[in-house]
Amino acid sequence: MTNEHHHHVPGPLTPDQFVHLGQGAIAYVRPMKSEEAQALFPQIQGLQPGMQLFALVGADGEPIVLADSKAAAVANAWEHQLATVSLH
Image (tube, rainbow, N blue to C red; front, top):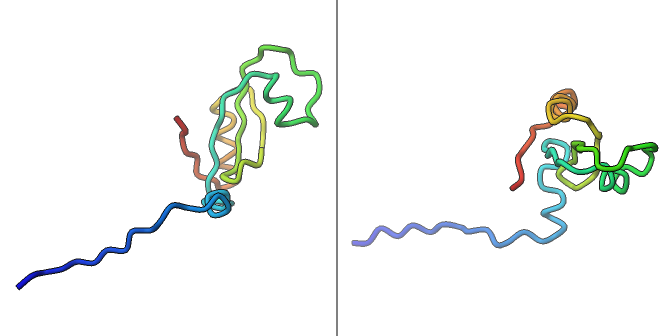
């Protein structure tokens, strides 16, 4: 007598599915220099070159806020009821 277990293993996510994964619930904090931040947040003017900044970015890649510290970016995530995840 055999005991067979059938498990459904999901296939890889499509790019569209991946973009929407965690949307509205998950964000990540991304360290960046001011030059990169200027490109991500074009509405912000007058950033000094070479500054270390932290962007809070939605799961879909949409920029949410730019902060001068990781703690400030994480606090903003909590204010928006977003869970933060680390990317390596």
